[in-house]
Image 1: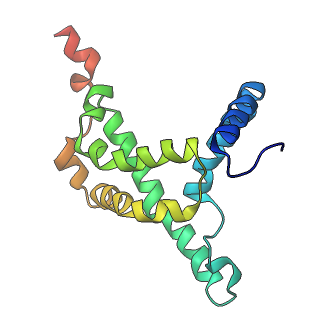
Image 2: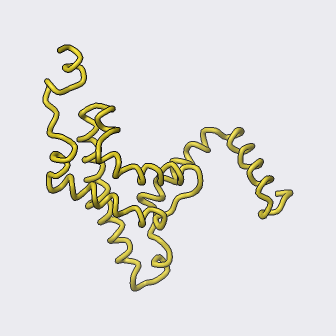
Length: 154
């Protein structure tokens, strides 16, 4: 590079030039940042410690199984009620910081350590889903008469 790493204007210009020249790769790289944040390699500093590496890897798998999957299922349940209901639900309010994190790492870079402070939001949504409280807070199961299409017919 013909400029210093400490020159933010030149770095920004080069980044935008690269994005314009490689738009497909830029999209893939941005999605890769989200993947790295949610499911990426074991977080530093545990990856270089032979005593705690296995515990860190196990905690990553526990996150996927016990928090990520139930959160996705909870969001799917709320979304089935319609886009407006989903976006105005309490579940969406709790999910908003996670969505903001995903947008941020899409634009910057992603690592598991950036996700960990947001695990409390995953825990809240997953617990509400697993104990059935999601139904009480954001409404019950969708019946054919409650769908947006059915409401517009009546």
